[in-house]
Amino acid sequence: MIETIPEQLYIVWMKNYLLLITLLTFGHSYASDYLLNTEKKCHGYSSVSVGSRADNCIGLVVDKGEGLSKPRKIVQVSRSKFILTDMVNWNPNRGVLWLLDTSKSQDEGRLTKIFSGLNLPHGLRIGHEGLIYVGEAHQIFRFNLDNPNETKETIISNLPTGGKHPLTEFLITKDNRIIVNVGAPSDQCLDEKGRPIYPCLEAKSEALIREYSIDNEGKVSLLGNLAYGLRNSMGLIENGQGDIIQFNNGMDFSDEDGPNEEINLITKDAHYGWPYCYENGKLNDNYKRTFFNRRVPKIDCSDYANPIGLLPPHSAPLDAQVYDGEMFPELKGKAIVSLHGYKPTGQRVIAVDVEGDENISSFEELVFGWTAVEGIRAKGAPVGLEVGSEGEIYFVDDKNKTVMVLAKGEANTSSGTTIQRVDLSSESVDKFKKVQEQVLKNKCVACHSNFAGEAKEVAKNLVRSGLVKPDPLNSEFYLRMSGESENMAMPPGNNDIITQDDLEVVREWIDSL
Image (cartoon, rainbow, N blue to C red; front, side):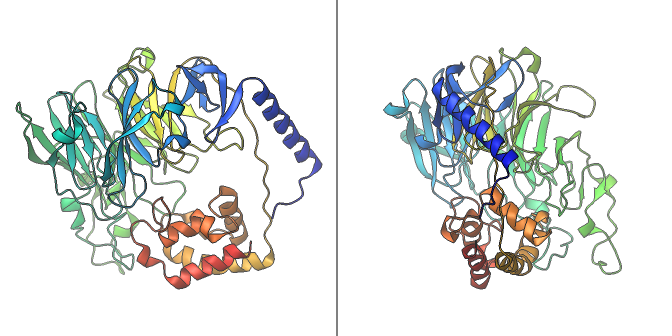
């Protein structure tokens, strides 16, 4: 239940309540989970209160009520038209490819389905010949937007689909090669008891990037594997020198402070360490040879390529694009990167200089301060990026089902404070301790080390986050474990790990709230 709010907090709450009334009176309205300023436009769209640089603004292009379910990537095909991939959820063959026409009003319906029934569609590019390329989990196809159904053609097939990282991201290079992510099927190549598998056979055919060629007639041929030991290459770019730069999603250790995400300069046939080594020559503790771990030989991390830069741990880079627009000349040639992570290191869009010869040691925040504030904004989860025809930057938020734009203009500085204090009965805390011991510590802490903390605080944080509500069927925490959520199952990809007894323990705790 919610505790009685002390007088000083009540005063703060009332100030924010009055702020909302004032904003609504003077040109603000609600749409999605954002308070929109309909008078202060950003590149023609109502502005939202998300952090940006002083002379920049952020506008809401697509509202979550317009039809998107889990949008991922976006490309602009004309001044007012865009194509988006939409996974819908993590179930196969539910995905949609949308055409967005921003010249229409929301009432007219701006989204039109091009294809449906797609298998976890993610990657999206425009080829040099003008065809649209789409990455499904198991294949890449292309088509002509003028005649989609008659021109749809599968060009790469039989991509691996099992495991934790089935999404297909890819890059079309200036010399007409296709660089394709083949994600690792597991986090660290461990067996069912959490012991290291050596040698890791997964790393021979997955956790790598493949290389294909497109000839003058459009025929696509496999050239081979380009590089190895890359857990999940969700950001792939080609810089001005023709180098391939990869933004890697690192392993999920039980550590809030690591490991860092990596930026790698891709060299033919190089191995970047997964699952044995990471960052700059650090050995994965699971692969450290000890008296009790003699099946693993002594591993020398100097045998593996080091990254050219690091990004914060758990920030989860999910897209990267080279900025080639005119609106922000100071960003020319830099990589624009979306950080999707739900922890404070994520929820941002950043710029990284990838043109120099020296290692990358810093980045600039372009979109930030994207924490949830009740009545003002949702917590951000950026994925796909696109540099628009005038140099504006579009970005897709898959969790909030929106598309936004970053442009030159006056920032919307509306702000607010959420006050919520959660109190749990001793009975509820006791029931949560059972959840923690039986379920979380055995099956979840490998990815969510915070679940191993003090029971009362962990339970409070789950309620505050919105993942838990006083009804199992309305709680994402329960629905993800049972496999009934539109979002990724927890643990990912294998609901057999969670038993019916586990679910009953979770239900009993939620029912006690």
